[in-house]
Length: 515
Image (cartoon, rainbow, N blue to C red; front, side):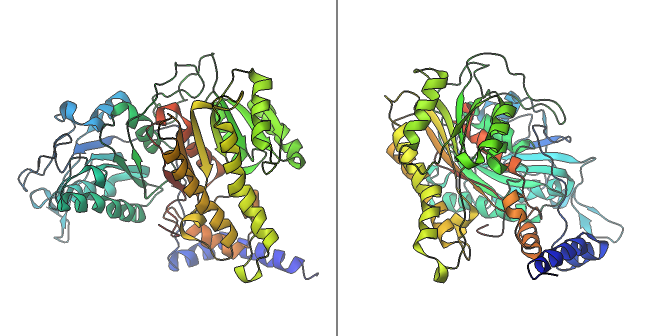
C-alpha cells in the first residue's frame, strides 16, 4: 500500500465506524448527539403557532404584566392594532393560538409528586413573542413563563421567534439592560432546543411596520431558515416600494408545509449576478434565484466553463466566464448585462459568492498565498462594487440594488491556519458596514451571509475526524447544505427585505465558533 493511500483508507474506516451503532453510541456518550433531519423548503411548521405580546405595550412600553396567578401580557385575540407582529402574522395568513403560561397556579404534579408546567395537547409548530414593549427586568419573567411550556412542545424543526426592541430605541438603564438580555436568552434557548428546532431574535427598529417585517418573519418560520439559529439582526423601515407581482423575486405568503410556493407570473424579471456560480454554494444560489423568478447572470472563471454552462442551462440564464480579480471585471459584468438585456438594463441584485482558501499557519504563510485570498475574497468585491455603483453606467447596479456579500464564521471569530481567509472575511463585513454608511442617501441594501461548516465538494476533502468535529460543534449537530446559504442569500436579495440593511446573518447552525 502506498503511503498516500493510507490516510484515505484510515478515513474510510473511521467513516464506517462513525456510521455504525457503536459509533453513534460513542459520539452520544462524548456529548455529540446525532443531528435531526431538518425541515427545508418553503413550508411552515405543521403544528399551531403560539403568539403573545409580553413585557409591555408595543407602542408605549406601558407595563402589561398581570397578576402572577394568571400570567402576564396580551393574548393573540386581544392585541389589537398595537402589535406590528400580530398584524404581520395576520398578513401572512397565520392564525395564532394563545401560549400556555408556566406559573404556580397552572402547574400539576406528576406521578412522583413533582410540579410540572402546563402541557399543550399536541405538538407546537412555533412560538412567536412580541417583546418590543419590554422595558423592565421583572417583565422577563413573562418570557420565561411563556417559553417553558412551548419549548417542551415544539415539533421537529419547530421555531422560536422573539421580536424585541433595539437598545438604541429604548430609554433608561433598565430598559436597555432588559432589551440586551434578549440576546443572551435567544442564544441560550437555541443551544437547548432539540429535533432541529431553532431560535432567532428580530430587533425591530422604530418606524418599521408589518410590510418591513413580513419577509423576515416568513423566512424564519419556513424551512428556508433551517440552518439559521441563535442569530439576531435588525429590521428598519424600507426605503423602496415593492415591485409589481411578476417582476422577478416576488414577495408573498409562504404556503403551509408541503405546499408549493407562490405562483410567478410572466413579466419583467429582475437581473441578478452570482459570482462563483459553477458549483457548490454558488450553483445553488443561482438555482434558488431562478426558482424565485429572477434572470441569472452566472459568473465564474474560464476553467470552470463546462460546469458553469451546465448551471446556466439549468436556470435559463447567461454565463460570463470571468476572473473576478481582473482589473476590468466590473466593466465586463456591466457590458455583459447591457449587451444581453439592453442598455437600460440594470442589476437588481448581486451575490458576491466567489471565494478561495489557501490555508497555512501564519508561520508558514508566504506573500503569494496571502495576496491570492485577499484579492479574490475582498479586493475584487471592492473593485466590482465601485464600478457598478456608478449610476450612469449601462448594465450597472440599479438605484435600489441588493448587494449580498459572502463572509464566514472565520471572519467573525478567526480560525487556526486561516489568517488570510479570516482577514478577508472580516474585511467583507467591514465593507458591508462601510457601504451602508457611504450610500445612506441611496435606497440600496447591502448585507452579508456568514456560513459555518457547509457540506460541499471542498469540505468533503477534509479528514473525517476533523469533519465530524465541525459537524457536531453546532447546536443542530450537523453540517449545513449549500441550499441553506442560498435560501438566506435570496431572502436578503428580496425587495420585500429592504428593511434589512448592513446586517450579517450567520448560516452556521449556531456554530460554537463565535456563537
